[in-house]
Amino acid sequence: LQTFSEEFLRAFSDPDEERAAARKIVELHQEDVDTKSTNEYATKFKTLAAELTWNDAALMAQFSKGLHWKTKEILSQRERQPSTLRSLMNTSITIDNVRRENEASRKKEAGKEKEKGKGKATGSTSSKTITENTTTRVSKEEIDRRKEWGLCIKCGRGPHKKRKRTKMRNREKRTGALNCESSAPK
Image (cartoon, rainbow, N blue to C red; front, side, top):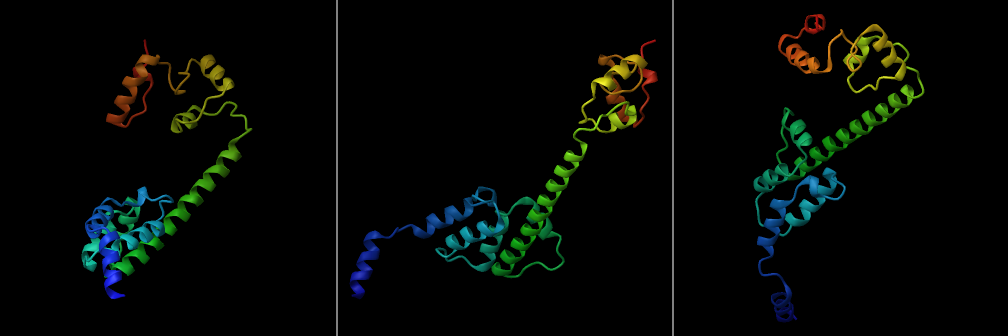
C-alpha cells in the first residue's frame, strides 16, 4: 500500500509544485483577488504558502508586499509591528475591514449630501461660493445674473475674457491672490 501511494504521487503530482507555488505567491496581490478584501487575499496566500518551505519572515515579507497600499500605510504607522505571519494577517484583516467600513460610510454620507442638494434652486448664489466649488454646475439663472453684471460666466469673478482666465489661474497659483480686476481688459 505504501509503494502504491508513492508511485501514484510520483506519476500524478507536479514535480515543480513548490516552484509553481512560489511563482504564484510572488504574483499574488490583494487587488488581483476577486473580492479584493484582505481576508480573501490571506486565504489565497495561506493556500499557496502551504505548498512552500519558506520561513515565517519570508512569508511575512511576501504577504506585506501584496497588501493594498492603504492597509500597508496604516500597518506601517503602528507602534508595535506584528511578529508572526498569523498576527500580520489578523492585523491586516482588521485594518482592511475598518478601512472598508470607513469608505462605505463616506460613500453613504456623500450620497445623502447629493440627495439633499437635488431639487434646490441655486438662485443668485454668490460668486465666491461658486468659485470655491469648481464641480458645481451653474444654473441658467446664475449665468443670466453673471451676464447682467458683466462677470465671467464660468468663474463668476471680475470682467475678464475666457482666454485670460488661464493666465489668471496660473498667477493665482503662484501668488495665492484672487485679483480679477488686474487681469480685466481695459
